[in-house]
Image 1 (cartoon, rainbow, N blue to C red):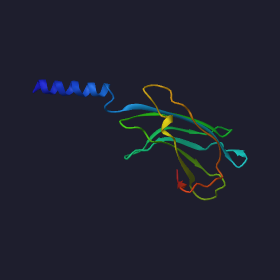
Image 2: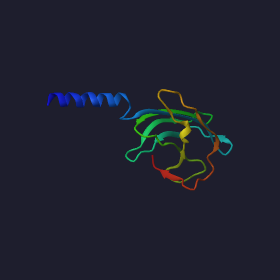
Image 3: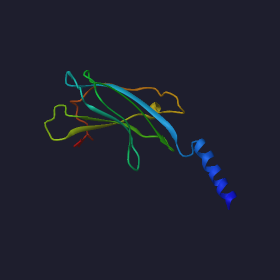
Image 4: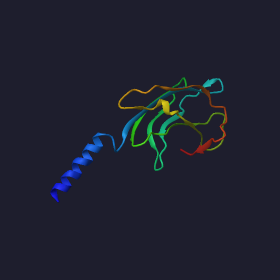
Length: 139
């Protein structure tokens, strides 16, 4: 019985070392947000891993006075992560709550094995646009 327990423990430890229970995956994203011709300062940007259970918030920042953001996050998962940027803003909107944009990040921007991934550069984005699947959040 003790030998069986010892073997199970050794197997679990070796599997964890080999990454059976997940591997660290990292994403970096940058961009510059505007509302019309003005920089969108103070806009919340989240880097999220979408999961079947609760989503993982990998990083969360606010845009600077020039509307620029840089998020850098990592999480451990067995399968490939599904990273998205969520942007919460009030550009040209007088309604309660924040407009929420959800933008998928392509898989080629996911780094593994401690390697720095390529940076996903969203570029310059005007938040006046209305996305078809845009939602509202009361954060």
